[in-house]
Image 1 (cartoon, rainbow, N blue to C red):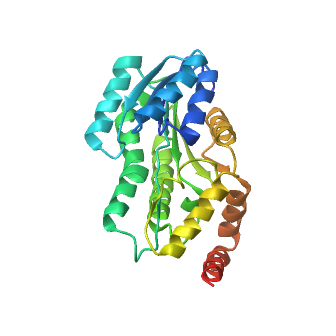
Image 2 (spheres, one colour):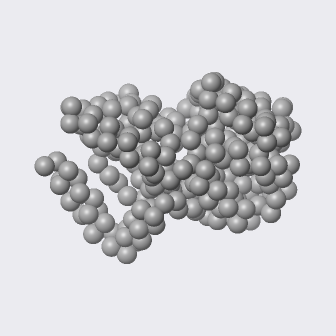
Length: 272
């Protein structure tokens, strides 16, 4: 997109993490904002931050996995702002468990948010985006949308699905005024690990506690948001965030079998 000032930007998962950082940066760019999250308290905090930057912002409590609510959300944004030019499907959750221990209920819950939330966002906001002089969609995949890892079968499934969906939709939108960027973050210091649903034995919970500690030392969400905004402005088809994402992306393209074996070796080593 050539210009973000005075554009209407929709951000899901805006109550914390990358979603909040994106909202603040978009406010600094002069965007009007429609902020969505299931967490009212987090939304209110984000609204305070963006209005302090001078932005006009509406707040919407939304479960992105709910089809009817997402359809109503699109109508609310149209009514409040008169259109949409930027859609960022950022909301996401995780479950830490081997597939054997993973409940089907949690698998469905995660897919509802991480995958169907993206699909619903694109489906219900697309008419408004196509009606704009220029517009852009951002779908959040992950490093785990590039490589499958243990204990994250549902998360990887959802993020691989977002990647495939985004690639297909991008081709369909070629020739229109709507661009699409798929984002693959690696380790970013958000609350997603701390809020994960965990299943398994004591050792599983101990490993997860270590992961939560590591997340605090990872890339700040503000840095990730800067890269995403740059991707929108430059019309990038995808954005990779963090060194490990670049390295694993290269490994998967050059040595696909070797990259998978490296993940398997690391997993087996961690079991002893």
